[in-house]
Image (cartoon, rainbow, N blue to C red; front, side):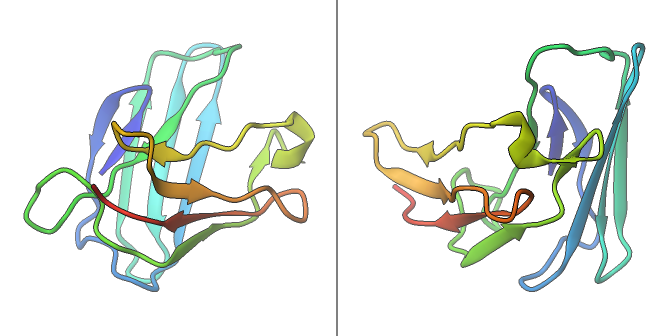
Length: 130
């Protein structure tokens, strides 16, 4: 499931499988933003647009992963690699972003984000689900 600034845009159909390659593209203008997620393996695409454009502060794009039964939490997965991440054509590292680790209510890490390597690549790794 894909969210941009807390607006639900829908789900890929068919859902991605382990090993699929996904491409996420965002276009932001002064008056709108458009987000498109494509499963490069199956060709499935989901897209959303919002009139919340021209954002000057930080914002977030979330890919929500749930168990197959729709329950909250994260199904176990190995490492997810994000590569070629650019903002305005510049490598992600040029913006000095901060890594975000998903933690549970007790402070245990559920999903750990790595440091950026090569200027535009990082990983997210499943650690636990409590």
